[in-house]
Image (cartoon, rainbow, N blue to C red; front, side, top):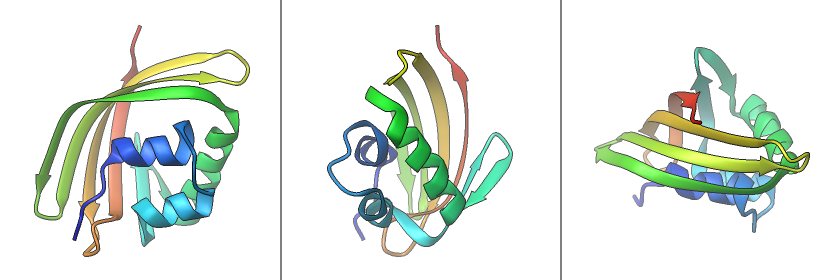
Length: 118
């Protein structure tokens, strides 16, 4: 099992897409994936729809890992990202990311929360 990293997933899914959306999702997210952000839970199809919409609006983005920890199938990470959207809007956020990894190392369940950074 080679575990995935959320920073790599963010780059491949949204900021520097070299794969189709389906290929990028298959690379990082297990089939039964669930994503909870600030208390709102999406299944994998809902997550795919959300990130597809984001991907289509990203002009450029960067992600910086601040802390990262693996403990068996548990993964925790704190990062900041800055993204410029196609309409010129700049979003700068810090996120706290907690995940359970599937047996094959992909994300099975994610819980995240974050805040805007000035």
